Image: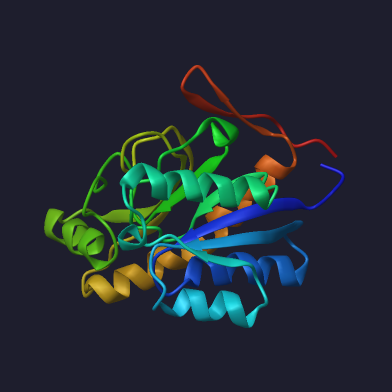
Length: 210
């Protein structure tokens, strides 16, 4: 793309994934701009962070809309108004209806190796506790396209990290987040470079050209 990739970020909490993306933009390793931030809650740290950065923030709280579809209509309208090229779910905890303008243009990052430890209710420390209960030796993160189910769309990229003997949910979460900080910007770069496509329900990545 000749112009920086225009991102829309959807959040529900502290905004640390959004912060990671902004830091990559600031350091020059990610040629993009965050044009719109949409939060499912008004009273979260991520909203404060976005406003401090001067970003355009909208609140899509379910209680502010007469019906679920009205909320989704508003989200799509705000993203279109922002001329967003790519939508990034950054700790967004609600189901998102992906409308036609953004088909194959919505990404999510999940703090586990999908298809394991995903689905409704699997977020935050609950994911890492489930991994520890399973006695898996490895965990990691997954970046995937978003479809009409939680944590279900085609997988684009996964990064792996070990589960060590004295891990608790917090220590494992910290190790996984280190991988998330690398994985999400990498996939956004793939999209910006035109290397990422959604073909026959699968993610395809073409080789990087010099």
